[in-house]
Amino acid sequence: LNPGGQGADRVSVSEAFEMPDPQPARSQASELDSYVDAIDRIGVQLRENGALGLIVVDASSLESIERSYGVEAYRRAREQLHALILEACEGELEERDLVVSGEMEADQVAIFLFRPRGHDAFYRETLGQIADAVRAKFLQSGNRIVYPYRREAPLLPVGQALVFHHPGLRERRQVRRAVKQARLDAELNERIEARKRSRQFTDLVLSENVTILYEPIVNTMTREITGYEAL
Image (tube, rainbow, N blue to C red):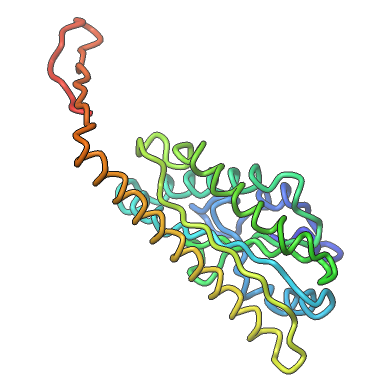
């Protein structure tokens, strides 16, 4: 999606999710333009600004929704994912910024943020704050993405990257390198979180601070308890 395009291609960030998609059985919001299709424009922005910031969301976990419930369910999940990303970035996206699919096409969302290299406060602080806001939004409301198909919020690793323009390298190469760097950062963040969860679970087991709750399963017509679910 291209907030900063020219002429007939120019749309706002919010409007871009409402553009008609030529492919049947696909949602307007479930499919984003690939960053590869916009790589030359991204390269121009990198050259003119001297730098760019990038945030990548790994949405490959949503594949299980498509496999279990079909294309329509996956489409709805993608719509909710995009909506949460826009909510998290509210007030931070400018007209020239891009929200597109990344290396893994629909299984990755890439947010390109173009600011002059001299805006050091943005690259030192704001870029990370936006990435944190996206993570926080997923933690707070991630279950909206997979409702009503799953109870738990999906795993959506978030990574970021900063690239300074190198006049001796092609812009395309620099953009691809930034996408790879952000993806690797997302993978690293997820491994760190997985280790943290594992240690927390180990601490609970060792301290025997585990409580098992049984939730009754009730027949709403007869009000009879037909069983229990262990939580």
